[in-house]
Image (cartoon, rainbow, N blue to C red; front, side, top):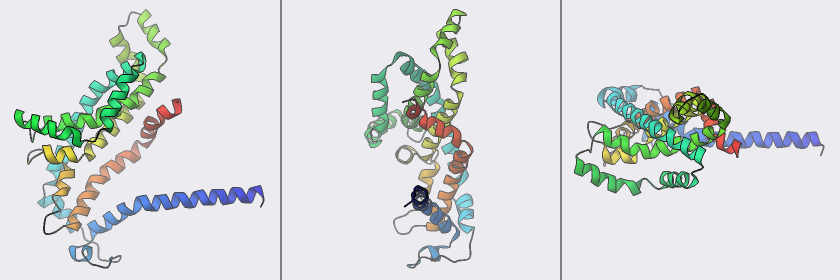
Length: 274
C-alpha cells in the first residue's frame, strides 16, 4: 500500500469516527426537537413516529400556561449574581495563586469543585432554613458560587501566569500600588480569559439543577426545576418537556457558538502552557 493510500485511509477513518461521535452527541438534541413538535399521542406511541404534522402548541403551553418567562428571569438573576460574585472573589484569588504559587490553595479549591454537590446540600439546607433563606435569591446565589467560582479561579490562574511579571514591576516603579496594578495592568491583559470564565460560570449556573430543586420555591424557581414539573406521578407531558428543554438549551447553544473562540481559549490555556 502506497503512503498516499495509507494517508487517505487514515483521514477517512478519522472523518468517519468524528461523524459517528457527532451523530451520538447530536441525536438527543434532534429527538428533543422532534418531541417538542409532536402531539402527546405521537410522543407516547409505542412505535417511534418519524413523520407527523408539526405543532407549536407545546411551546405555546409552556410559555403561556407555565409562567416560563418568570422562571427564565429567575435563572438569569441567579446566574448573573453568582457569576458576578464569583468574579469579585475568584479573580483576586486566582491572581494570588498564580503570583505566589499557592498550589495548596488551588488544590483545595479543585477538591471543593469536584466534591459531589449532595455533600453541601444538607448542611446548606439546614442553615438556610434556620435563617429563613429558603426560596430566596441569596441562598441560591451562594450555592451556585460553588459551581462557578472554582471554575473561574482555575481558568484565570493560567491567564494570570501568562502576564509578564516585568510589566507589574514597571508599574510598581511608576508608583502604582499592587491593587492598582491588578486593575490597570493585569486585568486588561487577561480580559479574554475573564470573559470566557464569566460565560462558562454563567452557563454552569444556568444548568444547575440539584441546589435549585431543593432550595428554590414558588418565588425563585429557575427553568431547570420548572422543566421537572412536566413530569408528574401519573403522566409525563413529553411535548411540554421537549419544548421547555429546547427553550432552555437554545440560549446556551447560541451563546456558546458566538463566544466559542474564547471558551476554547479559556479551557485550553492551562494545557497549552503545560
